[in-house]
Length: 336
Ligand SMILES: Nc1nc2c(ncn2[C@@H]2O[C@H](COP(=O)(O)OP(=O)(O)OP(=O)(O)O)[C@@H](O)[C@H]2O)c(=O)[nH]1
Ligand SMILES: [Mg+2]
Ligand SMILES: [Zn+2]
Image 1 (cartoon, rainbow, N blue to C red):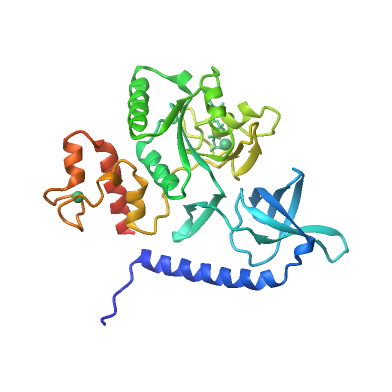
Image 2: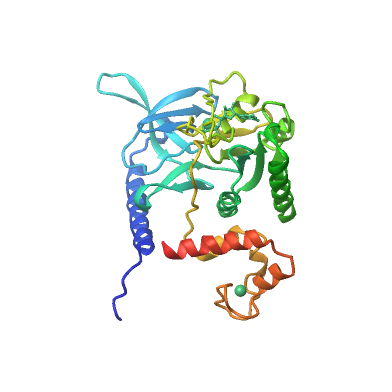
């Protein structure tokens, strides 16, 4: 068979598979050295470099060291902690294993690497605001991440105290669009105490993570719910409304009604890590209804006749902007 040059994306996938395999092997080895009688389960509250704060089952916060070769550990992970003596004979908490996750939210880092954001997520809360303005393509990319985790998705439009006639039209259209697809949209204002009760109610009984651009008010939302917590909030740039990347590490907080909320650092951009084009299709719940219904099995939904998706757009059954964003994400995926 002729040797085919691998695309960058294929090379990256192979490298990532190999890395996972090595990590799995190392974990396997490590399991053999765990003294189960001496371990307890904890959940990671925050993790920055070699500093890790976890919470025990009786809600005590403990600083932990991490045994080597455990692979990625993220906020929200459940871990096994063992008491060990260090060189000076001092007791220390050491994470010796990461428990199996229900899911892991990752983002792309430098040079095609992936960075874990948070683990064991039940709900992705996509926070947008009036300033900085909502970016529908970013919302759609977060929604695909939610569908594939899988996790429930909730869209928040914060800072509605700053609405003017122009932004009111933009956000009304946005709410209508996402509600018509089946997502819940909550408008909120920390300044004027709007929508906060509705939002708090939506956070009960699950682990939610707040995601979105820097400066939309993610930490302000957490602070409004938990005024006693020390949470940094900072003004946005006057000119652009862009945030100053105030939150630098994901952190987990307990709410009433068994709710857990993770505040995450704001992003400039977010690209979901999709392994296949099918995952992208699965990520658009309105587009995926038409998958397989086109005349050609391998329809690219661009130029082919009798494309079920294009027909749906023409009939007004599928939103044109969502369809465009779907094709854009597929194109970007194929170019990687
Ligand atoms: N007018 C108005 N300002 C708000 C509201 N919510 C938050 N802000 C302001 O927006 C700015 C940014 O808030 P943060 O909570 O730090 O934003 P963030 O999303 O956590 O930002 P990063 O941590 O950088 O990702 C602060 O000056 C807040 O006071 C709101 O409802 N209305
Ligand atoms: Mg913040
Ligand atoms: Zn088609």
